[in-house]
Amino acid sequence: MHNGTTITQFIIEEQRHISGATGDFTSLLNDIVTACKVISNMVNKGELIGVLGSAGSENVQGETQKKLDILTNEVFIKSNEWAGHLAAMASEEMEEIYPIPAGKPRGKYLLTFDPLDGSSNIDVNVSVGTIFSILRCPGSGEAPAEKAFLQAGTAQVAAGYAIYGPSTMMVLTTGHGVNGFTLDQDIGEFILTHPNMTIPEDTREFAVNASNERFWELPVQRYVQECLSGTEGPRGEDFNMRWIASMVAEVHRILTRGGIFMYPLDSKMKAKGIGGKLRLLYEGNPMSFIIEQAGGMSITGRERIMEIQPENLHQRVPVVLGSKNEVQRVLDYHREHDAMDQE
Ligand code: P6P
Image (tube, rainbow, N blue to C red; front, side, top):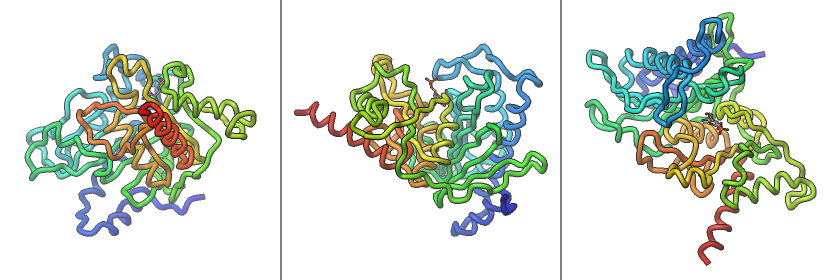
């Protein structure tokens, strides 16, 4: 059972810890919560309202857009452009930044988001989610350019996700731990059900798209092979594997019971000159903030994701995140490999 604390009440009580808080940030978070409620309803209705299937277009990454990718992007824009909390937004589904339109008040925050992560799963009814990150807007009120978004993940003010699964949940951090809220469909409110979420430091469950094995760098091949060798290998214990192809669902599982998620750099990406599969500003950084606040670790394989200085809006990075001791092992394997390479 829950104690009935709504996410709105929780955010307002959180705000009291922030000196000089004006309520602006609280109101922004509540607008984001509203957008996620609308998206939850759309995702839940699915083909009943004809929103499944392809939109017949591609996003900036050259990936086929689903109808819901575009519709959920519009929901985020409409829910967050009017209130005067934001100076601009950036989305996986938009090549350029979205400055707050003339005639609408401009605020002091920037919002980046992936409105429907894992959307390749939507047509087969597997959990998908929304990921968002809030930054302060530099400068003194003028309309920001793209470079205003190019801040390291350590500059994030807040980050969170909604997961549209058997339950719709929101998970949120403002830098004071991680808390989970479950949508009570009867009253349309997110209720605090998972206070102070923390990730076990150890795990025997890994998540990776194993079809890419032959393209991985040697340290990743070594780590995964040792997991697969189980009790007959150097780890001396058996491991379990998961792969949902929905980062929000993988991260939520890890927050709930531990684990390690990997989308590592591989030779296919290197050949195309891209830095990874996942996007730094609206997937890597918000999820890393949440994971670190829950006591986990999040790296590219070689460095802390939240310390990367972004070079462009849709920059992609390798991601290895989750239970601290397993992520540390992957980091150690990369360091050992690189040291031998330099000998
Ligand atoms: P693959 C979804 O498209 C996504 O961005 C992440 O949510 C997910 O972890 C990954 O890509 C899945 O990639 O190559 O297994 O389809």
